[in-house]
Length: 152
Image (cartoon, helix red, strand yellow):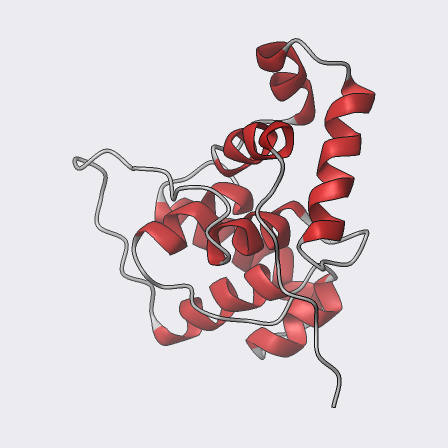
């Protein structure tokens, strides 16, 4: 049986970057807000993936899910006037698959859908949730309690 080293709190600089990630900001937007170079932002994100035991190429939704899961940052608040998002069982399966997998084929397998349907079904789920992308979908999924424990 293999065990993973415990996740340690992120250093302050990485935590600041992580807070922007869960808000859905791009690397360019983070660099501008924090007055950093793009290389520095990318370096912090690589460091986060390593600290959180995520694969080096883990998708942004996987990274955001892991940050929130390990309580490295606070779950973002969403306006109370937003439409109620109640994903069906099938949508919850896709939500969890996006949170846990980076490759479309792996998402398809976990969500029990055809690989050719991953992109369209993800876009439908993002629209239904009223968010702009799958990264913000992870934040909303945590805010509403739809995402739980997983192994990165």
